[in-house]
Image (cartoon, rainbow, N blue to C red; front, side):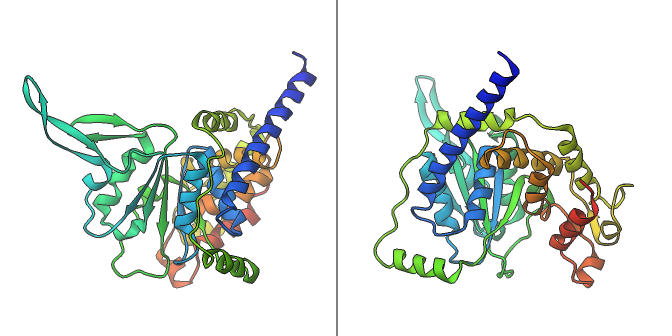
Length: 333
């Protein structure tokens, strides 16, 4: 096959990808009004097999958006309401004494809600750290261990957690190790007046129906494989690495603001996620390879929850969002 034929074939695959994603978007917009950027960021996480943290005040359709995503992909969906008394076994599952066979009673494993394709961890910061950490193994390794036995989770597997930013009483901050498991911290904003009016018109006319399935499991996994197969220009990878290195205060590449206000910068998983998200974004916009601009476009949701600010930053009212702004200004493409 000649280079021209390869290029034509690659462009055809990208166009097919864009058509399928367009179908998914249309399915989601049957129930979700506006929130285009949030939906695109959720799609990036889904197509790269990554997890997402949704942050927004109540009433912004976070739960509906996640349920609609599972319905559009025809995935098994599970919702876990995190509360202070939630136990790890309420998430992973537990063993109990069953009838067994002729050898007598045996321990039988009952799967928890984590055994789904899309798990909604609702108000995740309301549970104690021990319970929050029960998700760590599942999110990182795609399996859980109970009673000394390992149980694998079916692909695809995606955790979308939600947080309410305005309620702090009775909540537990997510451990840094768990925050790093989320590819993106997606901030859900208020709708425009026109969008809010459309929401009111739709939701007061009758029950909201979830979209019909737009893709089957095998087709979705093929789309995911295409994202990983996208060629990565070395200069794009170098930019992602430089951006994360500049956020580490002890690194010689660190910017002045990072040295002053950052306690811990983004680790290697930050660089990996910048590149993966840039690949997915390139395909979503109909291109066969990511650019530096793709990395810059996804930098805020990927880096802001990975930058741990110090006490000086708190005193000077400097946020991780501002530090990411500074990094994008200072780190040359």
